[in-house]
Image 1 (cartoon, helix red, strand yellow):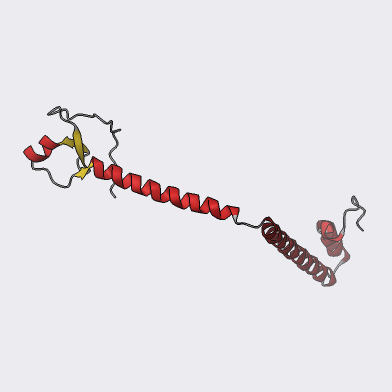
Image 2 (cartoon, helix red, strand yellow):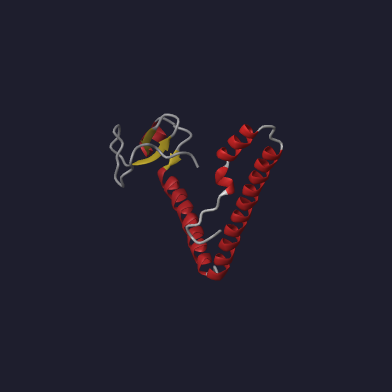
Length: 141
């Protein structure tokens, strides 16, 4: 379906040339026309307002029915299944996070082992102390 005109159609919008009710729209010229304009000027490529309205109504009804179906599907969702899925996603996230922290700690340990001087070792430890210390706020050691 082509785009609707920029003008708001009122039920009794009339032709400025003939005073008759507008029944069509020409997209190329952005012109609304009455029956007399159509037949007197032998206009082509007219989109009739009634058809535009019918198409819009059909598309709206289709979208509304799809919306109602999707809402009814939500009623069939098992809350326990949602909880399980969410718990699995959270668990996987923290497993990946723990793995990444372990990789970073291993990398720092390798740098420490390969360090050639005490100053380098001290700098590495100072720069990476958050990887080696665990907060004792919650009683975790």
